[in-house]
Amino acid sequence: MASDTSRLPSTLHIGNLSPYTTQPTLHSLFLPFGPIVEISLPAPPEPNNPHAINAARQTGVPQPLNRGFAYVEFENEEDAKAAIDNLDYATVDGKTVRVSKAKTKEVETEGLGSKKAVWEQEGWLSKNVVGEEDKRAIEEEEKGVSLAEQALPGGIGVTEAGPRIA
Image (tube, rainbow, N blue to C red):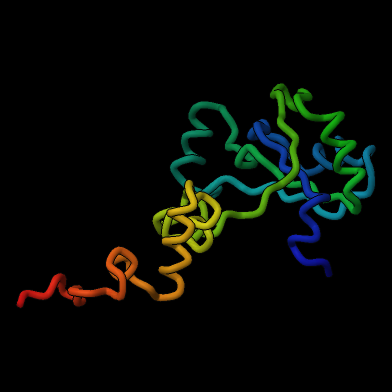
């Protein structure tokens, strides 16, 4: 079985689906472009919620079958590209769908959605440093040399708590 990262180039994300689109519909739509490995059509949260079922009965509107997006994995990347070229902005079940390459899942500790400040994330500073002075400061910090030791040659008159008082 291939790893998730090696499967990504041949996996597509289909967005803006009708909540009533089914797997057989997606299968028949994407099959002309090549062999399909897997179709993932996530169910809506709480699909068996009694309140939603009751509301659907009262209003006559059926419950949604999916969350409005799906993933389709092809056997090879060329088939996935052909599907993007032909089906992006196509109308499926009355909605204009978006078809694009699937992206990796964001890690909670990386990127803008993480719970850690961006500048504290590993490698962010080295990628986003502005000038040579900043680069030197980062390199010195990584070596364990404090900013105070850089400012004053040999760290004269500086302790961990601040300047020495004679």
